[in-house]
Amino acid sequence: MNDRKPGEYFLLAATLFLLIDIQCFPNDQTRQINNSALPKYGEIKLDLKEEIRIGSENDENSLFNRVRGVAVDRQDNIYINDMSNYRIQKFDRNGKYLQTIGRFGQGPGELQMPFDIRLENITQNIFIQDYGPRIVVFTSQGALLRQFITSGGIAEDFVPNADGSIWAIRWTHANNHELCKIDENGKDLRTLSSFPYTAIRTVTDKVVHIYTSGYELGMYIAEIDEQSIIYGYSGEYSLHVIDRNGQPLYNIVKDEPPPRFTADEKNGFKKSSIPSKKPYFFKIITDSEGRIYVQRNMNTKTILGRGPSEPTEKEVDIFSKKGVFLYRSKLPGNTRLIKDGFLYNYQIDEDTGLEVVNRFKIINWSRIQTE
Image 1 (cartoon, rainbow, N blue to C red):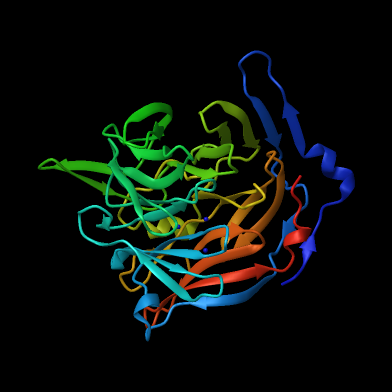
Image 2 (image 1 turned 60 degrees about the horizontal axis):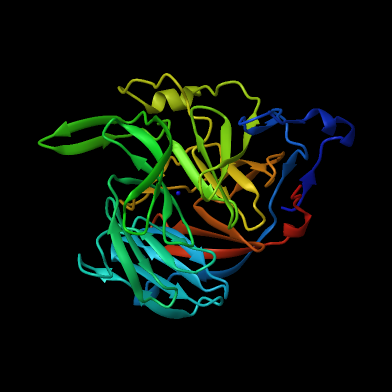
């Protein structure tokens, strides 16, 4: 959402009215959608059929080195963030190479380490989170629009707005995650929320070092539609939906006891101390219907020096756009996008290191509830 036959299993309809409780509060209190621990429609398995696969060791244009993001425009062109090749590769809907956007460097339109990519829905402009606090913006045709530096490092999660501003999760010197709105020149407009980021942080000779286990409590953000976004802090199962100006719309709450580390997870810490709290979730992604996928298991593997990967399926809780807990499900590892009945992810061959980006057709897309 940093990846996932047929068969759907539903709870008895007679129990459904017990699972959801919508509370409306007077005055300035935000409406809250309270969900039980059980999904309204039980479990669902996405029926996936691979349609295209982009990646070849015989073609320089599709020989990727650390894929870190995938975006798709209105014409179904596919943009792949090829991080360690310092470029964005554009392909048509059939996987034919069209264009390279960006190149290595520090000048206008050049990239030092593109961590992630977002496509703004209305303008179709490409927003790239480059090394540290830098944002580079191109048109979908690859023309440079602007670049700006934010006042703090972005923690990979951000959402662009049509006016050129962004909502971003940012690290602070106090070791917090902040949800901030930043204008098209990098100026802070407002800080909406702040929570402790529990990674170990040290400073040596004015250089900040951050040590992570993968189980840090932190904030995540995703776009629901052109009007709203969702964010949450993994130390609690409460998700917050706001409009593009930061005004609260509603909160989504799930009644679930605090998660506990398994014996295998505890053994994985070895000599490191085990955190006092385990995160409820590790990522939030959304689909083009506004459904919300909350990833429940961590990214646990590094492949051939390529950084974090997700070779195993990711357990997800699926909520409707209105905040109803619909399903439990699983997504393929490294799922990056779910749009218009298609799922996009990337995979790495452990023996060769070859990276490929896949598009799957979701056969049972129309049968997935949206209420």
